[in-house]
Each structure stands twice: as C-alpha cells, then as structure tokens.
Image 1 (cartoon, rainbow, N blue to C red):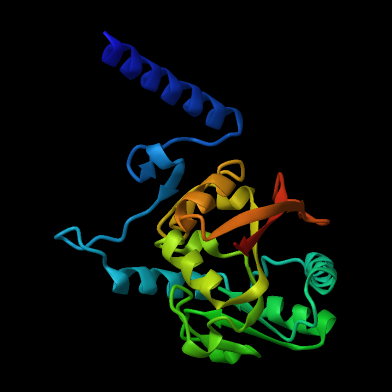
Image 2: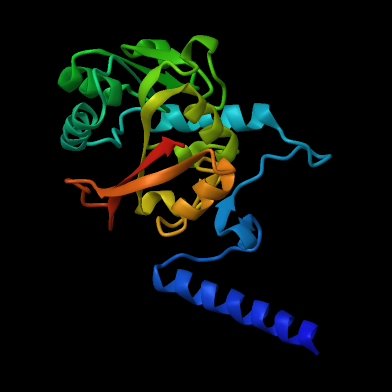
Length: 241
C-alpha cells in the first residue's frame, strides 16, 4: 500500500510540474525532453544510436552562417557586466567568450575592460572575426586551465552536453573567477540547432546537480536591456566552491 501511495504521489508531482511549466509557456515534449531532470536536450544520433559529432558540428556551422548578420548580444549589457567584473574581481586580465558568431561580445568586453578577451566559435569562418578562434567550447586548451578571470556565453543552448560544457568552462577559471551565462526566453526550448533548453527557474538546480557540488549559481541578475524579443534576460553568475 505504501508503494502505491508513493507511486501516486510521483504521478501527481509530474502533473504539478507539467502544469507549472505550462504557466510559464513551457511545453514538455516527450521526444527529446528529459522530464525527470527538467530540461530538453536534442540528441544527434547515428543509426546505431551512438553520438554523431559530425552531424552536430555540421548543423552548428550551417546555423552560424545563416545567422551571421544577426547579433544576439546587447552592448549595454556587456558594459553593465564589465562594471560588475571590475567590482567583483581583483585585477582581472583575461576573459573568454564562448560561441560568439561575429565576435561582438569580446569586442565590447575589451572596449570596456581594457584587457585581452578571446572568443571561440565552432564555425569555420571564425577567423574572419577579430579576437576569435575556431574552437569547440566543450574542449579546453591546457593553457586556459585555472587561468581565466571570467567566462561569458549566451550560447549554452548550443551545447550537446551542458554538464560537460560547464565542467570544461569552470575548470578554466581562476580561484575567484566567475562564469556568466546569459539566459533569455529564447533559451527555453530545444531544437536541432539549439539542442539544450530549460526555463530559467530550473537552471540553478540543474547546474548544482551537474557540478557534483564543485560549482554553484551565486546570483541571478536582471540584464539592464532585455530587447523586444525577450520576456526576460538574466545573467547566471557561477562560481567554483
């Protein structure tokens, strides 16, 4: 009887969670949605269901080139974050921006911070943009480990494995460094181009679970300018323990 009650409670909880997501305009899709963990993740599978990295990379490059004239990041928000970085960190000197397409993030951070900020982009046109290298942000250059003051990205939704991604980024930070994840309405749903999707309310819990207590969300900050296409624009500040 106890097991039946537990099972009924679990079913009711799933219904409650689903209803809560619907209130936020967040639809649970069975096909790619990992319901138990509260996020959507598109899988790039070969015929034998193993991970197809070449398919992932191909889709990311094609998507980059289709949107090459679009700038997602907002300069006023980068200025705001630059002021935050100066306030929070002692003599920062190097930053990384991941998934930067046209490279405006690192351009504006360098403008307001006055030190080296490097951008990464998986697409083969990365070198066309200043201070940008072609790089898969799931990987780590050895000379980045424990050497970066801050990391910024609005592209975590382009990760095929967000835990692997964040583990890599957090390994690059200095002891007191910070990782800044921009999260908006557009980051809620998954697709072939944007494989990871989650509502902002779930993100701190996901990050804590992925981290195995190694890092955590210390703050969630409203962006000063959210743009016309977003219901919200927030920055998750992630720190190593």
